[in-house]
Length: 324
Ligand code: AMP
Ligand code: MG
Image 1: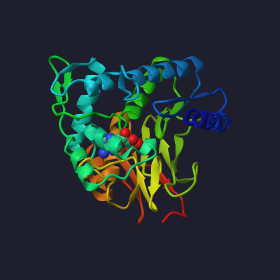
Image 2: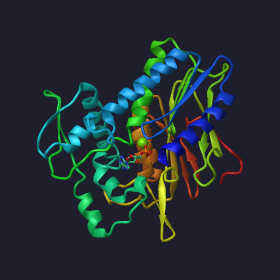
Image 3: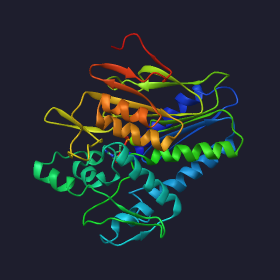
């Protein structure tokens, strides 16, 4: 059923994007990294190589692929160092850095909580005891730079790179496009947008999804050129229980959905992995601390809250008039 739905979405997106892409532009859509990915560029071979690259990254990082490096880390006995590739080590190191810089709001050891709430499997509302047990498994992983190993020190600890892997993949897609001499392109990796150059001589205009309206309804556009525009929102994956909506972004410190007025966060930065981690983190941190955090890391941010939309000074955002 999930696959049929994904295929239907793919076809719908292909039709939609094929009409949108400019003259001489080639567009391809695939379901990878648990999401719909669309790449548009003026070079068919480059687009094809981008999908090969995403497939490679998926094999490294996916928790759903049993022999991925992430799965090997998660299935090793606690306390046992696991040898990883330089590429995986570097991303884990970055993820740990973002954990520190976001006061623990972004934390890849959130996986026991992700599994507990099981949003992608239909959802479960745990009791406080179950939550505190899973929160106790959030912690620091051990990275050994000399031996390129990763250790999960406590029994039951697990990592989930779902909050950063798409942004990282976007960075690698951009590398492939540049290696192929592409000068104008856009890639959408499930809400992680990467732009290269301009479109028809002007910056790309990226529509930001209204968190409380139907798919494809934007509340603003952002002008983007050689940068990434990454959005996290509680509307993306969720379930309803007793009239209350629960979603896929968890505050690793409390074990629950963040208790603030933020409905979506968009981060703009040339560094896709940073933008991805930050969008998840700032959603957890709330508007003010999120803005401070994004600014301190040199990124722009658009925060859609229940009380209005806020953006940092340098974000080239056009917020539509009908948005409060
Ligand atoms: P994103 O859509 O980029 O905001 O990432 C959400 C995904 O990252 C979820 O589906 C989880 O797999 C994972 N995740 C949820 N909460 C966090 C968090 N606070 N820190 C890191 N990863 C998270
Ligand atoms: Mg993210």
